[in-house]
Length: 87
Image 1: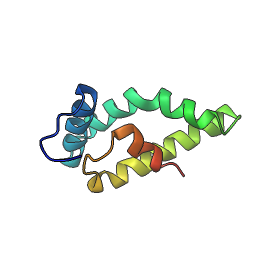
Image 2: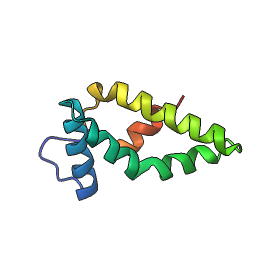
Image 3: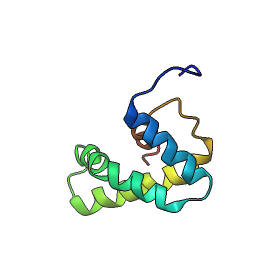
Image 4: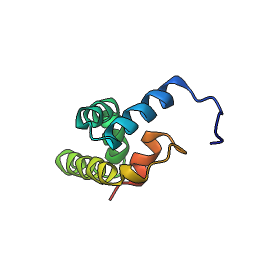
């Protein structure tokens, strides 16, 4: 997204939370997880029938997203970015 292009409020909030995580605020990542955990788990559940395994994959997805947040530039929404982190 071009510099100065307006974003929707949800994307702005997510970007601010990501920036806080990048500065070391782990509580901000907890907020992102709480916001997207049901959506991510629901998406994974379309492909994995076992609920326990689905939750494990969702947890691994969030771990991968957390580890890769240093590379997040805000070009995509956090949800999209999180989905690309799926194992």
